[in-house]
Structures are given as structure tokens and as C-alpha cells.
Length: 260
Image (cartoon, rainbow, N blue to C red; front, side):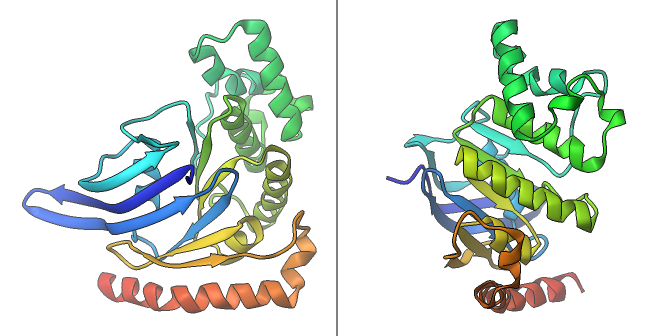
């Protein structure tokens, strides 16, 4: 049985008398330890799907089972990383990482040790006592990642986590996340508009249609791991990039027509 099973999911937003279907009969399975990237045109329901799985949005019909249990609201079995860093400016780096553990009632000594462990994993042990205002954008997102990893969720939900970073920092963050995932083997659902990012990071790429979002295609990325950045220069990588774009392009054009 898959860790995540989604069947015929439907989500509709209502604005007065107007109803807009964001997701229509969407189905997807995700295995334990799998890294799945989700790509699709703007407004297709990718982030909405992630928010439903996180327990922040409801849905009209269908089923969503995580570890065989229905998703009915937020829970510690899911960790969510947004594009915004969402760090507490009055807390130090280690205080931010340990925040969720504190809320869960973990004893201070254990909380400190766990926070230190994940700060080391993201390469920020030397900045444990710094505050968010003293950090670069990439460092802030690494703190946010350490905070999510620290309470050891069953599945990690990442919604355009590197979207606000400059191109160079984004490339470095992709490399770092790849290396971290090699160590932790978390189950990951990663929403992105960047095809290269999806192929480089994922075991499988799920392609959404234009709104209402449905699953158009699933592309298994059979590239060797661990993956160095040089994999992006290989003919196999370029072939995957072309295949994903061939599947996605028509949906992007449909979405553009809708907004014109």
C-alpha cells in the first residue's frame, strides 16, 4: 500500500454565486521514501492540492489517505515548507528550529540536541545563535527546512520553496536539498514551476493539466543517484526535460488563453 493514496479528489472555491473548480477528479499515489515533483501551469491547483494534504483546505469529494488514515486537518505527520521563510524574527536560529518541538512539549535538553542535529544537517551549526535578520535568503530557507525536518514528519510538503531566491542561490539550494534527501530519505511532494528543478530532484514528475487540475502525465526520472550538478549536462537529462515540457506546454498555452 502506498503511503499517500489520492482518488478522484475534487476541490471547488465559491465566491458568492460563482463556483470555480480548482481540482477535478485528481488521483495520485506516493510511495514511502519517494521524491515526487509536481509541475503545471499557473492557477492549475498544484498549491491547492498541497494545502489540502497539509490539512489547511477542505475538499468536496474523493478520498485522501495518508498511511491509510483520512486527512482531516493539520498534523505532525506532515511538514510544510512554503516559499516565504516564515521565521520568528525574535528567536535565534536554534530557537526557530526548536519551536515546533517546544510546542509538542519535548524536554529542553532533547529539544536542543535535536535542533543541533538538524542545523548540522543543513550546514548552519555556526549560526545557531544568529537571528533571521542576520541571514541571507538561502540561509533563512535552510533554517526553515531544518525546522520542518526536526519534528520528523512522515511526509514533507514543499510549495515552491526556492521560488523567492536568486538563480545562483536556487541552484545551490537544489544541490543541498538533494544531498539532505540522500541522508534522510523523507517522502517529499515538491511543487515547482521549474522543470529543471523537478527533474534534478525527483524520482517522478507529476504533470497537472490547466485548471481544473487533473493528472495528465507521470514521468519516472530514471537518473542515477546520488546526483551531482553535472547530471544536468547529460543527454538523458535533456531528454527528460524535453519530455516534461512536451507534456506541459499545451497546458501552459490553455492556461494563458483562459486569462486573456
